[in-house]
Amino acid sequence: MSVPSERPAAMDRRVRTETHSDAATAGLGAAGRRYLVSLLGLTAVMLGGLGAWLVAQGGDHFSAISRPDDRAWYRNFGGDRVSEIQDQDLFFHRIGDSVDHARQADIVILGSSLVSFAIDENVIRERLEQPHGLKFYNMAFLGVASGEFARQVIHKHHLHPRLWIVNADDGGGGGNFFHRNLSRSFGADARPIPSTKLSRLGARYEVIRRNLRWRFEDATRNVRRVFAAPRAGAIPSFDRDDRTGAADMRGFPRFLADGNPSVKMTRDPDCHTTPDIVANARDFVQSLGAPVVLTLVPNYHGCLTQVREIAQAVGVETALPARTDYSSWDGGGHLDGRGAADFSRDLVAAVEKTRAFQRMRGE
Image 1 (cartoon, rainbow, N blue to C red):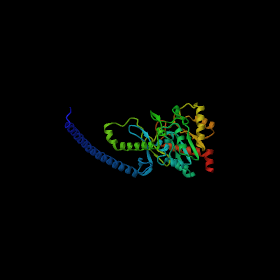
Image 2 (cartoon, helix red, strand yellow):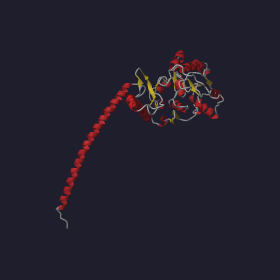
Image 3 (tube, helix red, strand yellow):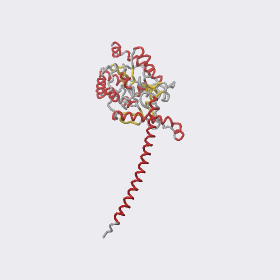
Image 4 (cartoon, rainbow, N blue to C red):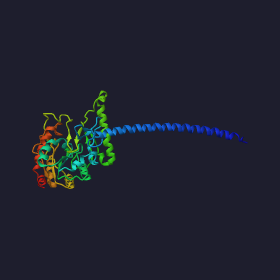
């Protein structure tokens, strides 16, 4: 037989204990919430301040690392430990002003890093744009051998210049411009181009992340070098001009040096194209919807035979300077500053002689 008076007493003790525990938990929860609110508020203030500072910097896109004297130039490539590039996201997702300027161009040149190094924008301005009243745009992509990425950018954003110049390089067997792959390569680091899989919001995040990372590296580089040597074989950073697409390669070793050796095109001239490449080239040219002229930036693995065969099979003209011995900073792979100026002058002269250019001027 139970004692009725004991059950209420035990229950009272249990209720008082639970009430005290709830009160303590509630008090602790309130303190935690206040701490969390303060932390979030401080974070919001810091992020707001950082955002306001980045907006005040101006430039091609939000967070861009620009030149103080010319905001149209933005850092396009960099990374002390891991090399990354911006223009694939900027062009594919129309972030910044590059695509808008490319839309205004009368002539657009396409190609890989060979074109990035070989086109001198000052020569183009003096020899082509000013005399003829034309706008030229360099839409080459460093590390991207195939033209498929450029083709997707062109169709995605409806680029319609009056003349296309295509650097029809086959990469010496390492990647043809008229292949259809979507990959990029920085030295031994080769991988699919992520821009084509990202949403526009995801691409914006990546652009901001890279710029913040590069800013942090800039601010801490001297301190970090006290503890660790720079990465061997790192590719130098470079800027790009959103108005012209030009790349500033002055940071590459010996790019501005005198006495660099000239390009020697040592490949066997019996280097013919293939039916698959011709078919891809025909589809590519037809998809551009404007006259196309093929060229080739001289390099040690270049093959002029293929360019001429493709042009003849597809029914387009070539603009091939008579010289191939332009100076190179890296032993014949890419032109240096002097080589780029010389090649750009010769390229303009060759393009001016094409029927496609003369028809465009007549129009």
